[in-house]
Length: 313
Ligand SMILES: [Cu+2]
Image (tube, rainbow, N blue to C red; front, top):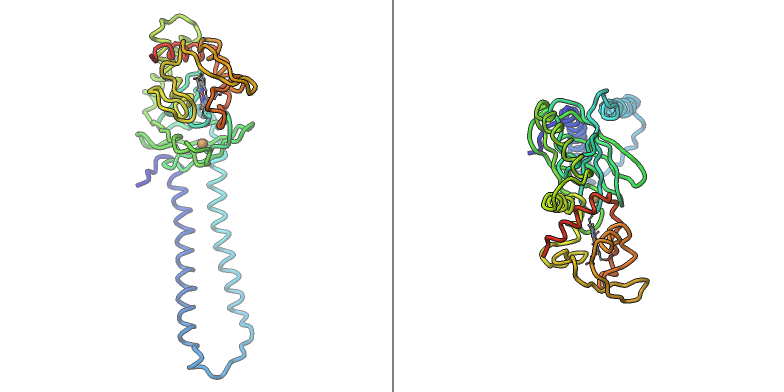
């Protein structure tokens, strides 16, 4: 069963039910009348063809009634649309960035997660962006959906009215691992949200301050590997997905193509940095067919990834 977990849910359900019921009544009316006419006016029963002229009453009825019904559908649809496009003041702002193939959520203090965390009973505005191709952000339980378009920032807003964890889907086919974009939204009580949010602040500062040991950095790198969507194309167990596995990558030699010419290079920090920011500069041999899209990571994030690679023996 689909949950009705936002204030929009009942509104959308009612509009949908109204249109569905009108459609079912008309469908049955048309089909039953059609069957009745086929039987009643079969040529065996009606040798004489009647010449029927207009019926003003009928004509007025079948113009006025559908017009009223269609206007009612428009009215409910428009009211719902207007509410969904009018963000209440003081809404919590979160950015959802789609990339091949994951969603990343960035909070106002810069903290990032792979699960959207929102407060219960408070309006939340989600700005929707994409780092590469078209995606579409969809939370069925909240009845909100919006495309992520390159070069554009779209938005949805909602107010969750039910605690729990609900699905977030990408509903724009965006490549062969499109289904990996399944993500979650976690609705928690407002007080708990504020505590959680306050606690994240420390973690953001930590990443850029450089004051952490290698283990912390590597753990952060592992998180980034999942959150930034590297996991969709790179395994850590030696198996080939879209790109080469990261297993034992650091310090090994790899054969690459530089402008079409084969070359051997050592995987060090500079090579990794270049592979992330300008993947086309050196293409790993055997992976020419599907190029890696550039990954806009910050230097601190790249450092964390490198620390993580060093642990993947
Ligand atoms: Cu997608």
